[in-house]
Image (cartoon, rainbow, N blue to C red; front, side):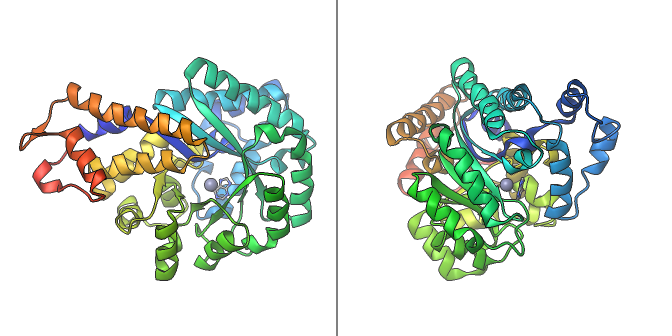
Length: 370
Ligand code: HPA
Ligand code: ZN
């Protein structure tokens, strides 16, 4: 039952690298039409290359895959394929990372990259009703000067980009390396986010908050090692965009059962669930929810809180955000009609709303399990 609830609930996704949504079959088709030597010989070879030991070993494969993207149409098709899947999983709003330097470094223009993606996002809004934002990430293993060049290339397309982020190899590339670039981005009106505390130390989360003035932390699962930091994140309700299947595939946690998502939720952190690189890590947003629900024995209220956190954490205007939260709450009430589950005279929706109002979890035992 809870599985159907997870599938049906309207969702927002806030941590998805669009290049990480490139499935092997589309990668092959694009390589073929661009007359490129395919990065892999067969789908089986691709799949067997997806045995990662850590972040760097994944990134090597990820950049290789992204290397097939040459024309505007390729960026359109990749983005459209993601939107189709997101729509099928009831994603109502998505904030998408892209890595311009992975393409401009190969001679593909910034304009080609962003125009293809933007066109797909416009179609996603028109045909699926999915709203979206783009977040441009700097590759942290490259220099701050190259990041600054990229920021300048983005300025003519400012209207299409809500914020800037920081991704790629974390360890050895602290957020403070990019302070000047992020200062300039903030001055230009971009919001900021950064990957921090995925493989890197807790100190990087502090730096992202203080030096890069981020609105959200991407991953951030290592924050639990620092009580003062947790207190700060809880008080300010700084969202953490957590990606459970990614964390397991990259050995940040040994298994889904060992993931600290439930612990973070219980600490009062504004945790969200996302897919990161769904084509590489074994699933899109719904599969991530299903995995943590089963692995960590999450209840309906946990799922509702995770989804609500995502909507709260979006970079949408207040009114549009409120509209989506109302849609979520309407879903909860409607769900109750379809699936009448009564307990002590109270409906499921009532129980969820009451516990949200009281800001506490309802009693799993008394409600019964999935
Ligand atoms: N972590 C850091 N950088 C990335 C990732 C990731 O999971 N995916 C694409 N770039
Ligand atoms: Zn990521």
